[in-house]
Amino acid sequence: MIKFLYGYVCLVVLCGLWSCAKEASSVNTFNPESEAQLIVSDSVDLSHCGILESEFVAVCDSGLVVNALDGQSLVYVLNSDGQVSESFGTEGRGPAEFLEISGLEIWHDRQNVWLGISDARRGQYVKRVLGGSARPQVVYTEDMDWDAMVRLANGMFVCAAIADSSRFYLLDSMARVLGKTDDFPPKPDGIPLLSHSMACTGVLAASPRYPVFASSVVYDGGIDTYEIRQGKIEKSWRFSQFDMDYDILPEYHNVPAPNQNSRQGYMALSFSDNYLYALYSGHKMLDEDSEMCDEVHVFDYQGKHCKRYQLDRKIYALAVDRSDDRLVGLTRDADGNVRLLVFAL
Image (cartoon, rainbow, N blue to C red; front, side, top):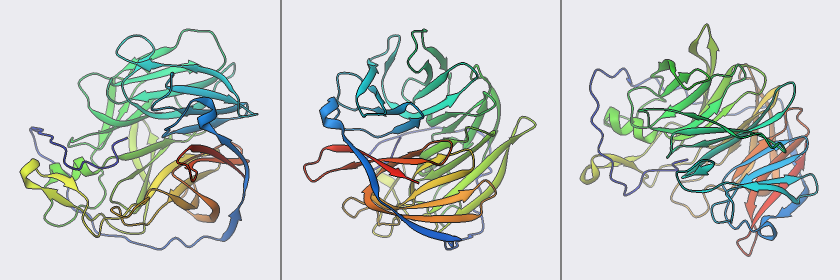
């Protein structure tokens, strides 16, 4: 995931007309039906597993999956006791190798529990049976630069494009393009369209039950949700607590960069069968540890504000299980070690 493009040179030539026009602002306040505090029920020091840095976590009934930025392997599967049951993946361009893990997700079919691993730099999505010996399946995207990619419940894929006139592409199970949408968050005044598309990088999450996905991007205080209907990406709802605010760097081809007013919005998203969980920051982007959050907003699939959870520990990544029993997150302790926290819902 690209957190923000700062001091990064990117020259992109786009041809054709853009329909990324400025939308009317619709800023609101999260007003849930109920609120509750969540206390950590379990904790795992990932440094004991050889993991010193991690960005993503996924959860299933039998355990947890995390990625590692500096371990001997890039993906670690933990059992219910927090012990490593499987690890795999090295850096490279060969089979079962990765250049940049961009996300983890878990889904089920009638026989297996599957782990999906997206790799933005290689343009690949790797599907692997958890605990199985079958060879991983790899889906490649061609001639497309994307920031995040998720598998939908109907077997299709969605990827969030980078510096493109379209925001999302809908792909079939073989990663062939079926459709696209140019539905970007409202653009700040005076910002070029290309710069705005470059600023709209962030996170994607897919429902395990329906062909539904959600997105949040840096600089924006909003969540956009979509549903696949008759092979097309259709907007479901948008909720936003503040509009995007950032500067551009003319000396670096107008790439976006944070200013003193830029804020972090929703840092991570995760669906259960019934709800969307969103980890909310609200901090100014240039503040120290602005990605650390202790507030989770819960929406139903229609966008209703259901619940606000206040966490007793700050986290920077989260995942929930399908049955709304556990919320897991990643944090750093006082020594800088990454810890996996479990909250009982």
